[in-house]
Length: 623
Image 1 (cartoon, rainbow, N blue to C red):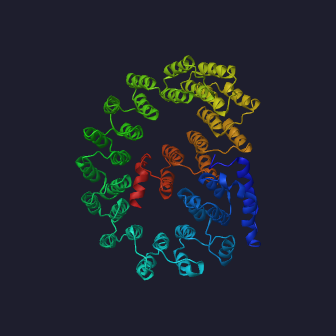
Image 2 (cartoon, helix red, strand yellow):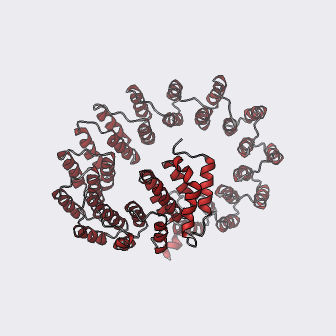
Image 3 (cartoon, one colour):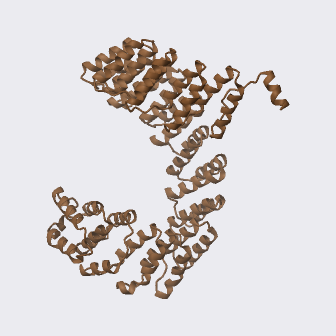
């Protein structure tokens, strides 16, 4: 099949190309090798296979030479947009590749000179690498390369200079074009307009636009989009809206990019409320609904927490036939559950479905999780049933995610019901399913049920992992069955499962709560010996335990140990010590720690106020 040579041919060609490490020492050999060994397979080469071979070369010079070889065999393939784009990317990422005398001679020896196509590709890569001045130097050497200036080459060098932030040089080249009988075209003007807009000189962009039109070059949608973006970057949003009016007068339809630039620019410059007011008015006035523009506006509203405005916009644009797609509606719903009441959220979902919308799986999960947090079980159940009707609960993964929602809401009865439903629907639970249920039962203190699920896990041939053991240990610790918890901890080793920081944290935290500090310290030492890195939760549990026992110095030493081990203490680490110091009447030390928190950039607003005793307060005032 054309475009896909056999893997054996691709591998052979790639290896031989890569094996030519010393190209400079034998410049002709490289092309001779390709011609003698691989010309027979040239008929199998297509754009995708050429791209694949270009990308396999570590040295960008190899990629360039392979492209030159391909251009000799198949000019049409060398002009392929995909091939050219990939080569430019490679020369930019792995380059620069410069036109040395040796390289030019080698290419000429291959029977192919430096073509206009090749020079434009190189100039594009030089511009992206910031080598605009070098591109200009090469432009001056075109007679040596056997080339004459053309509008296309001028465009390439001007574009390179604009990309390299050499706008003055770009203008000099632009002014030089008539001397070489080259007429600026639409691409020339678009490149320059983009350059001046990027530099914030929008007045010059408008002058270029007028000059462009006077030269008989009709601006296109790219021209106007560049102007919209330029005005927005210059904080001139009214002028950006004016560009859209100009486009309407000249019968140029805005593109998705045009609207995207205008909408994002408006939100950035005007603030959310003003931007919404102007943009919604603009979109409502249009005779044809601009779906992509509406979707972009909803994204911005949702990102800025304006869920109510997003709902209002959906309602208003619904009269023009607009309905958000699944992805956009999911973004709106994610914003709605953060700021609206459950009634409004449910109405939003119901209205979307009623109008023919199809919420995605994640959108359903978002609203179900939200309703479960508010204990609106009937509404949550209604949407679960709707999910099933929509065919979205159709895999082990989707069942696992739904079960997890109910586990996190500590509704283990419903979670187990879904587990049983999985079996009925012929979806076999996996290790994630069992672990989720074990964790849920453990967290609600139902250790016996957690053990039953563990038995099922083993009966179905699964091997418990660190999450399984940690969940069981957590459940046992929650009901203070510490001996069983440590037995389970020991059993992990027999199963070849290494405890992680979470496993140790569960045990250390429980021992600290039970005031068994010696055991907690021994376990902490064991953790370090085995190379398990303690995290903030480990240290904070020990700090809290020391503070409860009024062992302030030990707590402070633990904070210092944290810092020495590159584990930055957080506000909680300090707040428990501050609380303990205050309760012991050591207000001065407590205040010192508050000051230390502030020096470290922590917000101390949530810290309890340090109340001084009258006697101490008097000393401070008199001092």
